Length: 307
Image 1: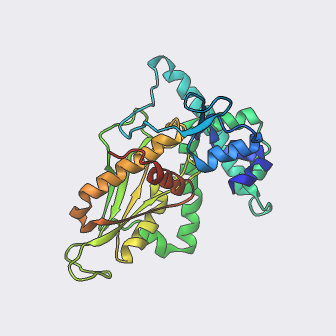
Image 2 (image 1 turned 30 degrees about the horizontal axis):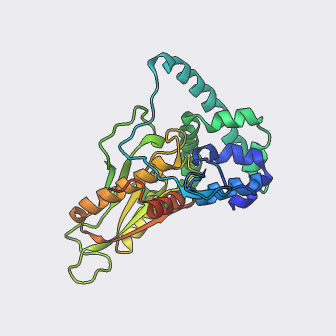
Image 3 (image 1 turned 90 degrees about the vertical axis):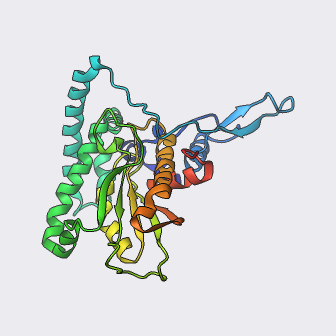
């Protein structure tokens, strides 16, 4: 999918904050497109060095991530609070126009998002991409547009959504309090567990239940764990303990390493506390959707965020 995104650079700039992915030099002899795809797909920056190589040759090494879930890189100087607020209002207005335009043309256009994004000037698309307020408003519009249709067509799912039994929401897995209180900065998780007295769901004897940790997607920038509450309930009803993780996202996470570090911190918390919810810390499965699957794989491959 990523290899084909270069066909529509405006769509790419609008929806996929690739500046968030760590950039570095790539091997010589590659085209710009090949270099970009290598860095994006691998998500492990490659750096050239010649100190250990033979004369005339260059060796590759993997840059070790040094990010931690306890790092808080979101620093907003007090002198820019008013400016931030004004820019946030502008971003909120334009992203609302974009979302409503997508909803309006979607019945008539095959790819409404790309059609609308192509009409935005590139600088405006970059501005919206780089404002956390844009993605906060985007998430709210997602709820506003989906909820009425859900209520009219699948009232049973809406009732499930409003059922708060056997779940613990917004559990912090770090001690860091974000300076900006928005979904893109939260380091929390939701736990969908079974009542210890009900005994419902498949289970082998008295053995604790296997645990499924789910990481939501959203092009590294939007989405929220609340959108996957029905998934958490579905996995729980299948006999597991389900944990849905929220993590720092672009632009409040400057690089992909902060997001990967948050996954490591969340897994550490689950490993230490899931037994309180009848979960088995020795049987944890990590799954993810879209960019959530990407940063989950990145954490597993690099150990970013692990002790």
